[in-house]
Structures are given as structure tokens and as C-alpha cells.
Length: 173
Image 1 (cartoon, rainbow, N blue to C red):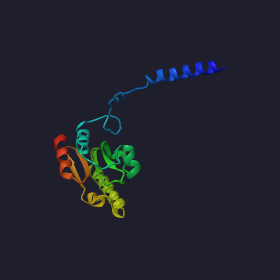
Image 2: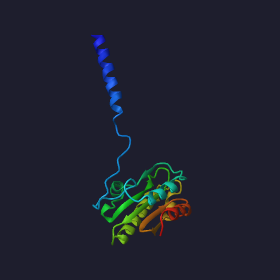
Image 3: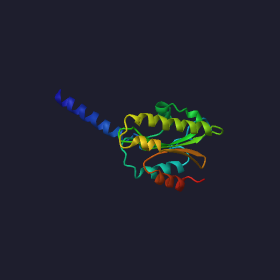
Image 4: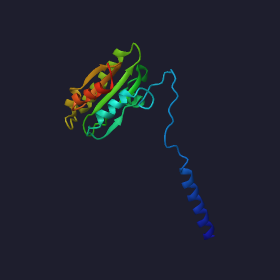
């Protein structure tokens, strides 16, 4: 009986290791269509993502998460119907503020997107007003909203000059 259990265990372990080789290692690219989907860093223009990667290469703030349409709606109440593309990162707040969010507004929604980014800025200022860790309140207060190359960008970083240089490097007017 013990020999049977040992053989059965070996077979199960072998099957498990063999089947692990069939898990996909790379996501296939999404089929491009003109539907109402929101672009993210994996399906759309590469310039905003390159700018984000360049900006966060030197950012030392821990707890930084990707900005996605779902997270922006969940955390800040920003409707994905305002924009067609979202790129960026923002901090969870435990180690300071380091937020850069790039939105590509839908035609005619530019002012609404600008107001949505302003509401994110005010929300972050409110969060850090009584909990100002690593000078996060001043970072958010000094944050700016800029428009470049059809994108509207929220910058709330300690070194906004370097971030703007990265944006200018990758996103043309």
C-alpha cells in the first residue's frame, strides 16, 4: 500500500511539473479596434509609457502603483468615459507623494479631464493635510496640470523639472 501511495505521489508531482510548462509566459497583444475601450500601457501609444518609465527610473518613493482606468475610477471616481488612454503611476501615500498621470481625453472632453485631474490633486492634498509624511502635502500642493501633445498630464513629484524634461523628450507638441 505504501509503495502505491509513493508511486501515485511521484506521478502527481511529475504531472504538476509537466503542466507548468504550458502556462503562458507572455500576453498576446490585444486586437486593435475602434470600440470604447480605454488604452493602457500595453495597448496604445508608446510615448506616454516611455515618459513614465523615464520619470520613475530615478524616483525613490516606495509604494508606487500603476494608474489604470479601473484604479482611477475606484480610488478617485474618475469615469473612463472621459478619456481614451491612461498611463502613469501614483503612490499609496505611506512613503510620500510621487504621482504622474497622463490621460488622453476624448474629443470635446478636455476640460472635463482637466477638472478630473484637478480633483485628484485636491484629493491627494486632502489626504496629506493631516498626514504630511515626507513633505507630501507640499509636493501635491505644488503639483501642476499640463497639456502636451494631445495629453493632459498631472505632475505631483518632488522634481517636476526632471519629470517635465522626460515628458518633453517623449511626447511631442
